[in-house]
Each structure stands twice: as structure tokens, then as C-alpha cells.
Length: 121
Image 1: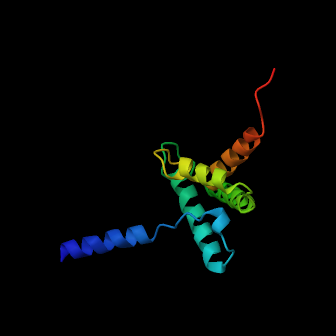
Image 2: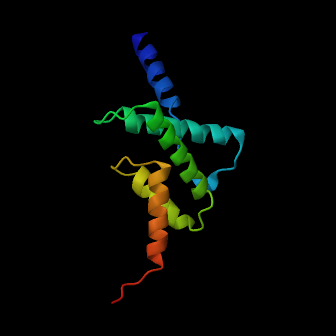
Image 3: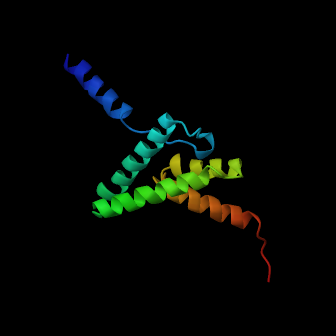
């Protein structure tokens, strides 16, 4: 009985985590909007409240949530899906836990800009 109860608690804990939504797969439905907002809120809370530096103040959390949402909306207009996929792979599916829309958007824009540049004197 204790094992079953323990497994149920683990299942509930994992099911309550909001999922990352790929910006180019976003269909703007109310359901997906809620998933994106939940992911952003959970991620920001984790980054600013559970880390070694306590920055867990309502002002900081709301500001970073808004910036993440702004970055997500910008990413829905990305024009280079392979590059965006690579940024998501780098920051979401690796040992560095930087899977937030601000970082992905920043690195996507920098890589997009760098792809048009060449080394010169």
C-alpha cells in the first residue's frame, strides 16, 4: 500500500510540471497559452527562488515572467527553425539548465546575426 501511495505521489509531482512549448509549434489556443504561462511561472520561480542566491521577490518574479513571455512571443516569429531547434537542444536538452525563453531568444538572435558575418580585417 505504501509503495502504491508513493508511486502515486511521484506521478502527481511529475504531472504537475508544465511542459516546454516549442515557439514554432505554438497554435495560440487557450490550452497552449496556459501551458506556456505555467511553464514560465514554474521556471522563473525555480531559477529565482530555489537557487543559491535568493532573489525570490514578487517584483523580480513578475518582471522575469513578463520578459520570458515577451521572448516567447518573439520566438513564435523565428524564421530559421533549424537554428532555433539547435538553441533549444543546447539550452534545454543538455547538462546546462538554461531552458528559458529569454536565453533561447537571445542566443537565437546572436547566432542568426553571426551566421551572416564573416571574419575580415
